[in-house]
Every structure is written in C-alpha cells, then in structure tokens.
Image (cartoon, rainbow, N blue to C red; front, side, top):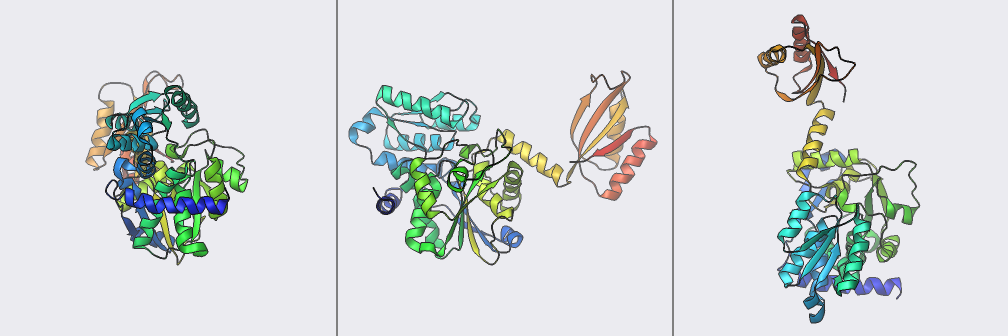
Length: 410
C-alpha cells in the first residue's frame, strides 16, 4: 500500500475513532499557559492528556483497537506489552468492553503503574528489564494462547485512536503554528501528524522529542548519533529501543524535525509544570515542554502546542525531582560539617539553627568513614535557604560555638 493511501485510510479511521470514543474518554483541556508563554516569547498551549482516563493518552488507541475486534477475538481475549501507560489503557479498555486481558510489563515498571493496571482487572505478568523484552514475551503468549496482541504503537488502529488528539486541538485552536509531541515508538506523533496534515497541510510545523537515553527514532530518521548515551531515563514511558516500522514511515513523511533532550531538562519541566501550572506530568509527559524550554525550538511570536502525554509518575521519582530542583535553584542548601561525637552535640547545632529560624529538611550523619577521626561525626544538613546575609551570620554563629560548616555547591 502506498504511503498516501495508508495515510488516507488512517485519517478515515481517526474520524471514525472520534465518534466511537465520544462517551468513553475525556476531551482534555488545551490550556494557554501565561507563565511558559512569557518564558518562551510565544503563546504556549498545553494539551493535558495527563488528565485523561488512566492518566495518559493511551486509552484512545487501545479502546478503538479493541472496539474493532471480531466477536471471537474479544471472547478469547487480548494481551499487550507495556512499561505502564499502554498497559493501563489496554486494561481499562478491555474492562469497558468486557474482554479478558493480560499485560506483560518490565520488572522495573513503576509500582504505581503495575497496581493501577491490576486494578482494571488485567492479569499482570512481569518479565524483562525493558519494553523490548516484555514485548517478545507477550508475543509468545499471544501465539500460544491465541490472544489478540494490542501493539503499543505500530498498528493503524492504535495510531488512529491517538490521532483524535489532533482533531480535539483544532476544535479549540484552529491555527497553531507548531506542535511538539513526545516520541517513543511513534504512535502518538503519527496519529496527530496525520490529523493535522490533513486539516492544515504544511501550515503547521510538527516536531518530535525523544530522551537522549532512547533516541531510536531520531537515529533512524535523522541519523543522529550520540557519543555517550545514558543507560536510563526518567522518561520511562518513551524508553523504546526499536521504533515501529509503520510509524517510522509516517514520521519520515509528515514530521518536520526530531530533537533530543536530557533528563536534567525533563526534570526541570516536571518541576515547573507542577509549581507554575499546577500540572503533574511524568517524564514522557513533560518532554515536549522540556524541548520548548531548552530553546532548541524557535517559538517566538508563534502559537505552540505541547502534548503533555501522561501524568503517571512514581511518587519516589517525583520526590527526588522536587528536592533536586530546589537544590539546583538554591532554595535548599546542604551544610556540611564535623561535630564532636558525643550526646548533645547535634542538638546544640539544631538549636542554633532554630534560633535563626532556619528550617531543617533532612539530616545525614556519617561516623564510619575511615577518613573521619573516631572522636567526630560528619553531618550534612539540608535546610531551606535563608537570605545570603542570614546564611553568613548563621555560619559565623556556628563557628563561634565551635561548629565549622560549609555550604555544599549543587
């Protein structure tokens, strides 16, 4: 089938999917962010798919795919492989359709995503350390048990379901200049690109974003090669080693550019979304905004839409990001010093901090490092940052009492 005919057929399915999904999914907000608009010099809109049922866009494609199965296929059941969001989308959709469901998830998938998938009634099988290994296992089970495999991205009906996002955007904002979309396997950007190209042609610029730990589509389409690639990423939802064959064809034809961002940029976007936009996003969900904030995309004077694709972040990851960003911004400081190792020593230091109205967030003690004299303990205090002047007075007061602390640089 030619590319043109394939794209035409998927577009027809997008229009059909919109009607089928009408009473199944949320029509998520398209929010104009004054904060990010001022930061970037353009009008920045956030398509909040983190507010979608199951916490991500994945339910769109999953439900449309299951709705198109034959009676016999529905009776036998479905299976999928996923790091989390597709798992929940398939599990929820199967439950809504009354279809038996199995999900294979990597063993390191976030606990919250595993529990959520089980809560929708799916049987969860933990296998492999990443999506690709879970995918192979799911395919084996599908063949053995004659189940319908619901692919996370490389399927025309999955792509069509995700493409309904593009139609929703145009209902609110008929003439966006740029749209920025996360890429894992490529299903989301393929569907949205087909919808937007059919409606707007080349008037809109479509840009995909990947994590530098998993730049598979950027390597395939653009030939990007990273000298040193991280082993892991906080954007686990798009940690896909091998992009789809179908999605690669669509992206190579319809997408203008693919850029790569790092975990520091993603963490900053997660933090800013929560603090400034009161929006909780996971790593894959925040990566589109991370790309815009990085300055790699020229959005000055333009209307740009960022797809916030999901909000299913683990609480431990979120806590780490919030603390880390506050340290980076200088809102939290680490004070490191050595104390005599006898009862009451730490209490005296904390008393001095209390008198200076300094809030202690965390205390870390080290006594067993051979480099530390046996009569001493090394203490690290994480504190909410006072003003520079108050901090200098505090350090002098501590020094006067015999406690020598220094400020650790982030």
